Image (cartoon, rainbow, N blue to C red):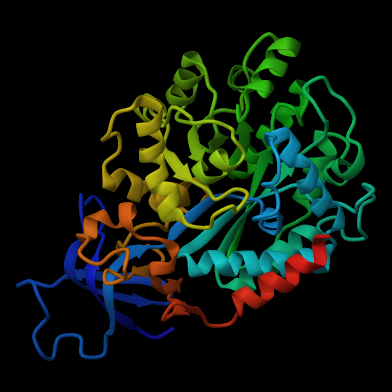
Length: 450
């Protein structure tokens, strides 16, 4: 890939509290080779980088969506009639899960991932548990549903960390999987490990990872098997943790401790682990997560959509847990909204303002999210890192008059104009170059909803 140059009106560089004006960015073979702030301020002089692609607005490194269930995109706008909570929401979610096959999963995930690209997301962590046929029977290729996700991400032009989830039981008490849940299960953790070990995609845009769906779905005696598999392969490990109070109550009833304590006792926590949600941790849980440097992925738009609650984000960060962000159920696909919601929800919880600086939200959406997904060479505009660029308009009705540092409190996904992934342009002038996103979403969703 030849040398490419971009001239950013503003760019947010590593370890900077706010964006820098007039930055020349160069890349070869998908890697950044130079990031040069131009002196003097204002437009560069004639002859400087005359071949550079101009990027008006604010250019960021690629955004990382650290927690996704691609098929949940079919539920947007369909689960709001009547009262209920997370547990009632699961019923229509299971109905969609029951209808998917490898072809329809590929179509839906491709469209969902392309929507993410439009929003400036260059890497997604797919928390994947739709492994087998609707009745639990394995496909001839036991990883065909995984392969569909890998292909979908390639078509959409973004990178993927496939977080293959162990989902073995229906509750903390060990109840058997029934109904649509049967397609999630591998029987036990050893058979789960055997299946995921056999899936080794060679595509450069994908990396493997592991997931413990929750303490409801993996028996305590098998937690170490999943964690050990991830550790032996040096791969990220994610787990839903304390998303609802009922999960905490059930874990205490069976094991006499919280989910976080149970995970700690079985060697799950650590620097390569990410606890997703952590909405209802105890003070001791927050300390366990922080002391082990376990990351925490917050998904504010899903947590509010499902009425899960507001987690103690500031206390979690201060305890030592790196924060990342996810769109989870895709009620909204907008990492700017997820980022500002971390601060705004904390204001609702505490009735005070000013918990997170803009630079902290920027890190959660970029470098920390990529690290949580095993891409330590992405999420920064720095020499040697992947050439991922996301440019945001500063002249829309939402961002006009807003200083560049305020973009995470003002912009939306609709303000993304240009997206470059590994040096290749995926989105230009706000349009995906290869996927008709609205049409493909409409068609793919029509296939799997009644």
